[in-house]
Image 1 (tube, rainbow, N blue to C red):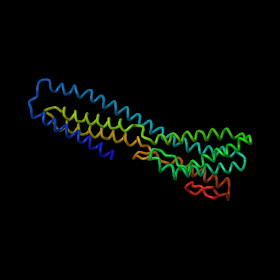
Image 2 (image 1 turned 120 degrees about the horizontal axis):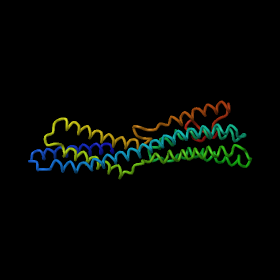
Image 3 (image 1 turned 180 degrees about the vertical axis):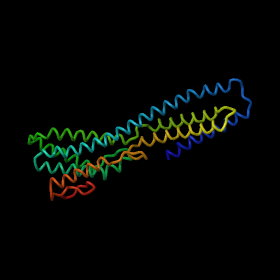
Image 4 (image 1 turned 135 degrees about the vertical axis):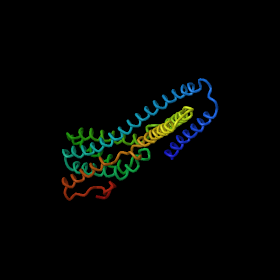
Length: 269
């Protein structure tokens, strides 16, 4: 719907501007009329360009932050598994299992919800709560891996929260629609201000400008939804981590079952 409205607004502005320009061509021009129209268009053009540049930067930064958070979370889960190697049993096996199940639950339950403004999946939070329970057990034992595990888990938690928060559009709807109005007004003004003795090249260049403005708007709307747009961040990093530590668990604890299924849902194991 957003795409349709954006394209329709820009097309309507172009059409109205060309119609208004045609009306200008049918009436005798007055002295200084061309200059006054150009003077009015210039500040509007500046506003539109600055607004688009600012919003693109904001959307791109949000997209980049989301991508970094995804990679950081996957890395921290892998790090949790590795640091748990130095913990005593039975906490070692339990934390290894929790790391595998957490990664699977993120992929199966939380990732599909990323296009709904980043909602936490309780199926994944079950395993992060398990981490903290095991940390308390290690703290009571005075184990030296306690601080390393807590630090890795804290960074995992921060990365997860950042990923979830970046799923929410960084550009408020009112700002986006103000930008649509500004660019549509600019296109309409350019169309209206075409030279009275215009040639086909003027119209072609104007259409190219309209397409570029429309493309900029659609690009901003797309990258402002980093997990659901056409240009989106994939779950490949976490999927790779889930596969890697899943294989490690099978090798480190042969014959031992995981306490979850392939989707990370807790089982009776």
